[in-house]
Length: 467
Image 1 (cartoon, one colour):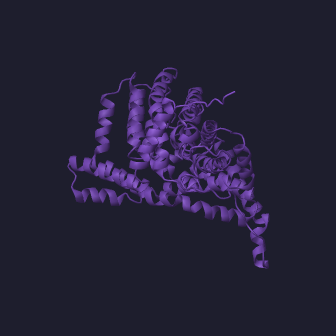
Image 2: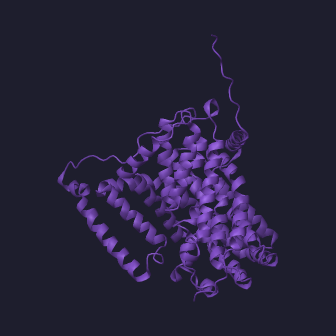
Image 3: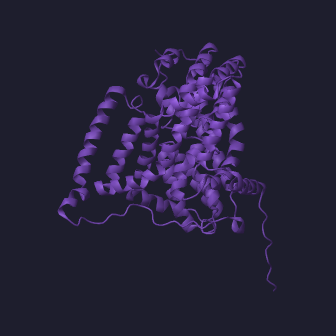
C-alpha cells in the first residue's frame, strides 16, 4: 500500500492577518522611547497651531516634567511587587505546573491569554510578570509555539480588562474622597466600587472580552512551520525563580532568617487591619494599599529577607523604562493643558454629545486620548471633570462613565509599547515582536467595546452624586 502524504494545511485568514501584522510591526514599529518622543512632537505641532510659541511649549513641557513622580513610583512598585510575588518559589512552582497543560501551539497561546487576563483582574503588574514567567515555561515545553503570538497573549490583560478589575486606577480614585482633587469631588462626589467594577454590567464585559480574546489568540496563532519560535529568534530562557546560597558568616545569618520577615509582615498587617476597619475593605483599596499588600505577600512567599531582596533586585531593571518615560508623558500632559488643547477637546466633546450618543463618544474619545496619555490614573484626572459634568447634565450614570472609561482606555494599550515594557523585560523581546498580534486584537476589540458600553448603559439608571 502506497504511503499517502497529507497536503500541508494552509494558514486560515486569522493566521494570515496575525502573521502579516507581526511581520509589519517587526519591520516598522519603533522602540517605546521613540514612540514617546513621537507623541511629544505631535502634541507640540498641535500646540503651535493653537498659537503657543516654542518657548511657551518648552516651559509647559519642562515645568510639568516631574509632575507625575509620585504616580511613577507607585507604578514602579506595582511592577516590583508583582514581580516579587510572581518570582517566589510557591508561585513559580504553580506556574511550572500550569505550563505542563497546553500541548499544541494554538492551545498554548490561548491558554496564556486566559491566565494573563484573569491575573490582570487582580493586579496588572502581577499579570505582566506572571504571564512572562508562564510564557518562558510554556516555550520550553511546546517547541513549535510562536513566541510573538505567545508574548502578545501574555500582554492581553493590559490591553483588555485590567481596568475593569481590582487595580482600576479610576475606579479606586473615585471610590475614595481623599484620592480625588477637590474640584472633582464637587462634581461627582464619591462613586463607590459597587457602582463601577462590581456591577453585573461590568462582569458581562469582562466575560465577553475574555472569550473574544482567547478565541482570537487560538485562531490567529501560527501553527507548525509557519511559527517563529523563541529558539529560531535567538531567544534563550534560563531558569526562573530566585536562587540564594547559605550564610557563610555570623553577620549574614539574619538575612536568611524568616524572623525579621515575620516582624515586618505583622506590622504591615496590623496597619492594613486598622485601615480596613476604619474605611471598609472596598474604600481602603488604592494604589498604595495594593502595593503594600503585594509587598507583604511577597515577603511571606520568599520567607527570608535575602530571597526577598534578590527578587527586588531582579525586578528593578524592569522599571527602568517606566522611570525614564513617565516624565515624558507628564510633559505631554503639560503641553495639552498649557496650550488649551484640552479645552478645545472638551468643548467639542460636550457639543456633540446627547444622552443616547454619550457612551460611544466617551469610549472613542478616551481611547484616542490614550494614545497621547497612556496612563489610566493620570489621564482620568484630565478627562473626569468635563466628562462627569456632561454626564450629570445629561442625567447619565456617572459610575458607568467610569467603566466606559476603564474599558475604552485600555484599547490603545494594545499597540502602545509603554505598558509592554515589564513583559518585554522578562521575555527579552522588543515591542515590535508583540505589536502585530496585539494590533489584531485591537481591530476586533474596538467595535465590541463601543457597542457593549452603549447597550449596557441603557440598563443603568441615573444616580445623583453622593456628597
